[in-house]
Length: 80
Image 1 (cartoon, rainbow, N blue to C red):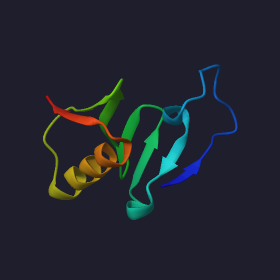
Image 2 (cartoon, one colour):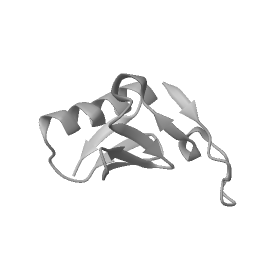
Image 3 (tube, one colour):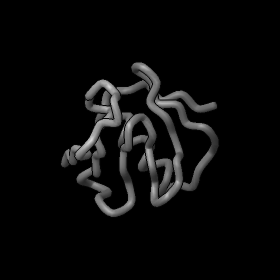
């Protein structure tokens, strides 16, 4: 994963999850911004503690993005 740090952290504690990450495998279409997983331009899942919470059912490609993030960050995927 290539990691890009924002110029400001807006008063938040600086952790891996407060960095803007572009995932190497899906560079153009997948980002992690703060605790939000963004696929294309849509917020599709949220990181909470050691879990990745998926808010709804998504397309096959978006699901691949979500699964990739969960695997790369070592998070348990929770589908709600």
